[in-house]
Image (cartoon, rainbow, N blue to C red; front, side):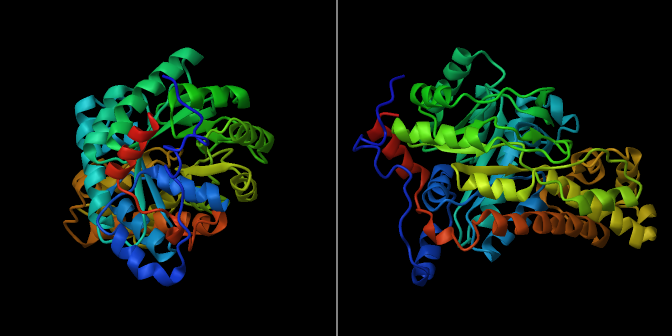
Length: 419
């Protein structure tokens, strides 16, 4: 597919640019954005123009979604909430979510989409819902049908031309709906859901330009030294020069796209220490220093993915709950959750120990006060892990800078631009 020069093409201008909206127009803005999700491209455009980092956070329960929406509202930050492919299977009721069926992913994608709309329908901040690490056309379709306004197709493990072809096919599928498309180029080391790699392959900046031109994608996840999972290694240094060179090459070639940092959890040591103090066995659990992420956000990285921090905070909070209220260990409604939580001291992923309250996790049904305590712990985990990053990355008090645009309007822009 031939994609023209996006910076000189009149039809492309304004595709994802941000307005200069003053704070005094906040009430009008809230009315405009009310009752809709926006394409992720609109949120990334503001981050790019005003040179701040936009956090993107993975959600794995209805309660987590509610808490994430509320903290973004409180800090007046645009929100990118993410459902990974495995998370869609999990939210569709698959306990073996790493091997979930496409049917379960369809159910889960709709449940996540419905929850984001439920808590975001009256929100004064723009919210995008994004598929993280989609692996197939079928998964992408399930998410678009479920209400996602952005999708990622991860063909990074494929030969380059196959990655290009797969990403291009997703662009052809998603853009007519106004849905943003993120690709990936280069391989990150580490383990997270369906992503497994022992080593990294860094992104070639000129190849990134070629990728944008050939696929027409909106955003590109690059490999520049970050790492999936909680075991990134102490004092990990990311190669900011790759991000800088990639962005400079894009600007030189007139590519109006956005760069994404995967594997960017900060792994706060107080979470790790708290889990280990209560019987956990987390080893070599270190993340990316926040200062490095703030730095690269000013050098061309627009979206910063965070997942592990939330898992750690939720698990630490639940261990503390059962420590402070030991009678809950024998609760008829959450006693099994406690047993599952303690079963594997190396585990910190809530999806592996909440099977006994799946209706609460996937549908938001809270049958009694004990289950509510679990929900509150998970909500608090989301809030305390996300809030500092919104401030540190710089997206707080910036939601008024994001263009209010519907997927239908974005679809028209794509059509006019020939993408």
